[in-house]
Every structure is written in C-alpha cells, then in structure tokens.
Image 1 (cartoon, rainbow, N blue to C red):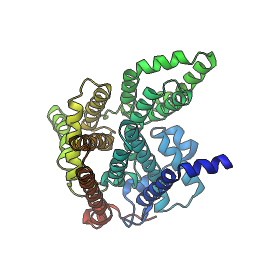
Image 2: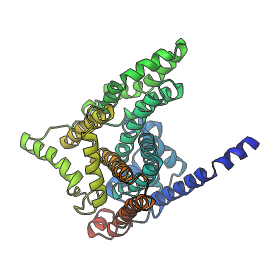
Image 3: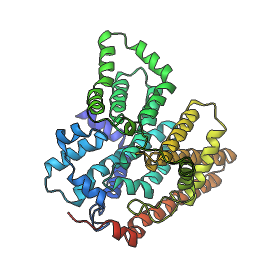
Image 4: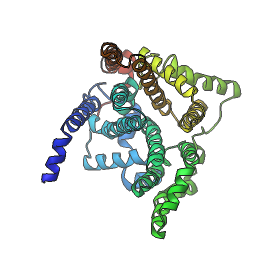
Length: 395
C-alpha cells in the first residue's frame, strides 16, 4: 500500500490530468446519447433487433468486436432503449480516441498529443460515428489501432505481451470487411521487427502461443465462408462493380468528400458541410507536406499505402465507409501542428514572449475548432429537418 501511495504522489499531476480527460471523453460520448435526435434511424432499429449472442455471431460473424459488446449489453438489458442501443458504439468510440492519443504520443510530444487528441475527440465526424448504432465505428477504431500496433511492434518487438496483443488484435480486425489488406500491409512493413522478435522468443512454447494467438480467430471465419460465402464482402469489394465511368466518378469523389465537402448522409452528417474545419484542414495540408518531404521514411510509405488502398476500397462502393480514412486526416493534422510549432520554436529559441505567443495562437485555434465541431454536432445537426426525417423510430 505504501508503494502505491508513493506512486500516486509522484504522479499526482499526470493522474489528475488523465481523470479529467477521461471524464471529458465520457461526457462527449454519453451526453444525450439516447435523446439528442429524438429517435432511432432505420439502421439503428435493425441493429437493436438483430439476433445477438453466439447464435447471431455464428451465423454472421463480420464486425465481431462490436457484435460481442452488443451481445453483452443486449442480453443483460433485454428491454434496452435508445441509449443502450448506442452504448456499444460509444464504447468503441472511447477506444478509438484512446488509440489515437496513444499513437500520437508515440509519434510526437505530450503537447501535440493533448492538442490533437482533443481535436480528434471533439471532431464532428468522431462524435457522429461513435454515437450512432452502425458499423462505421469499427473502421474509425480499426485505423488508429492498426497504426498503434505497427508502432508498438517497432518499439517493443522483444516484449511478449506486445506480440500476443498484436496477434489477438489482428485476429479481431480480420472480422471487419476490407481490413485484411491493411493487416497484410502492416505485416509487410513490419517484417524486420517481426523476424527479430521471433528469434528473440527462443522457447518453443512461446512460438506455439504466438501462432495460436493468430490462428484462434480463423475457424469461425473459415466456417462462415464455407457455409455462406461472403468472400467478396470480407475483401471489401461490392457485390457488383459499377460501370467504369461511374466507378471513376466514385473514386474521384473520395478526396472531394474528405477535403472539400462532406457526403450527403443525413443520418451521419450535416448537409454537405466539410469534414474538416478550416484550422484542421490547414494543419492536415501542412502535415501532408511534412510527410511528402520525408517520403523515404517507413511511416510515410505505410500511411501513403493505407491512404491509397483505403480510398480505392471506399470508392468501389463496397462495405468500407469513409470513416476508415478520417483518422488518417487527423494523423496528418497532428504532424502539421507539430511541424508548425517546431518551426516557430526553432525561430524563437530564447524569446519566452514569442514562444508563448506561438503556443497561445495554436491553442486558441484548437479551442475554436473544438467549439465549431461541438456546435455542429450538438446544436446544428439535431435541429436539421433532414435529421428529424431520418430519426423517427422509437424504442
């Protein structure tokens, strides 16, 4: 007990900060979770009534992580209402924010983590996807989680817990349609660390546990392919490809939706408003420039590969939604903010007034961005007529 007390005293400020951040995240994801829109959308009603538990997962195992959490919540609360219907998605929204913040902390400083973590957590797209009972949240969660695993394996490839955790996470991600391509890419880019770690685990039983951690998830997936097919869906492809001209139009529409105007999805977005606000868009462009000037780096090549394959899968019109690519925009925005602050602080290395001015301006921009996104989600969207038309079902 004395050791625990001493540890808490030494890290009092850090623990207090984490408690405040977790409380803020809980408020963001749970405030008016069931009542903001006044009702459920048709897709949410379907999610609330679809079979859960082992029976439901066995017959349709895709999106296994979310369906498992839904099964627990829906079985414990058989007469679940609107809040509990959306609660599993809010839980994965919290995991998404944590994964993103952890990733940025490994790549950048604590200051950048705080600024861009809040920026991502309060973004309208994160709130929309995390507070709606749909499968989009799986893709929002999958991208930062994959990048986090990639980074942890680079830094701690000799830690057994990182290896086993990575294999278990990859196995879960395999149940999300389209994610197999990104898992294969991660394995390819991280092959050197994987081989080094494999040699590090000399006892045969560690090798066996590592293989089992990766194979334990496959039987259910293989049985589903044998029984019901669905291979094209698992690969992220549509059941039928669009005509060439229409396909090119859809592919060209992906960057338009990401950088210029959002998609017209009343259940998920406000009109054709841009996904990124002005400050985040500027930071994202600067971040893209930052990575472009370092195109030989392994991280840059991985991000570019993820972006190209992700845009192709979204443009094909299959099961992969735009939510897969949004975290990459905020990863680039984090690099842009870090680049801006680094250049400013290097220009004024010893002038405390100038340094404080630069940090203050960026902080004010982040705060204004957060306010804009919070108002867009909590005020403008629920009062939009199109939103009332979509969310008209009650439970």
